[in-house]
Length: 238
Image 1 (cartoon, rainbow, N blue to C red):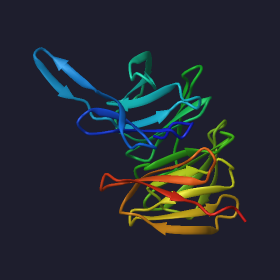
Image 2: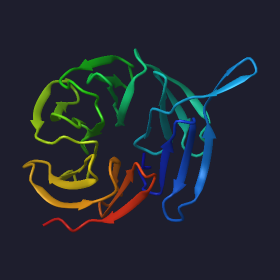
Image 3: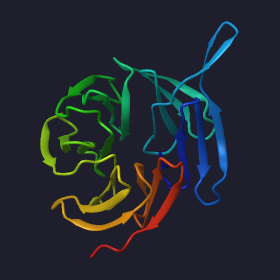
Image 4: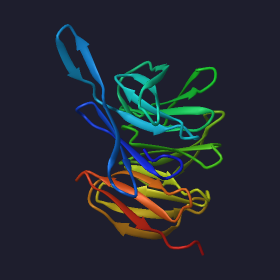
């Protein structure tokens, strides 16, 4: 997950560690480990998904069907979070009003950040690999690697349209006009969100697991399975 100010990126791992890197120096500036304690035994907790709050003050961490709310600076727990009805989360996205979670069987659960009311959205038949809110948070785009993507109305939960894109990662440009799409083979495409046309593409290491734009939309960070994070400078909009 990238912080809203573009200064940090947070990553979670199978050994329970959450690490936050400074994107200028590349150094780890914060680190913690989630562990489950039973008697004298300490077992690492798998981190399923991470996302920053829109104001950057909190880092949301999903593990084992539960979402913790962490202080983005200290990584200490600051709220009880949300208990999800299941523990197979594959993706997560946030905005000021909602949390969205994608699951192994293709179900998406939308949670109202204020009331904590849950709503199910069904349309995928495979794991939801990626979720992204539009810049104005009125739409959600969900994707999986076989069968394309779906656009949803974030407020009603109704299905709006289907994009002919099968993806592993998604991110909206801050200008709201473009969306970045990452694929299993390492290709990243920039698409016009309204028309769906490809405006640019480049190749990274396969597969592309994460995408995020810098706040000014001039750069994009990608994370790939080789554990590299790479920056690409984008061409100006025409």
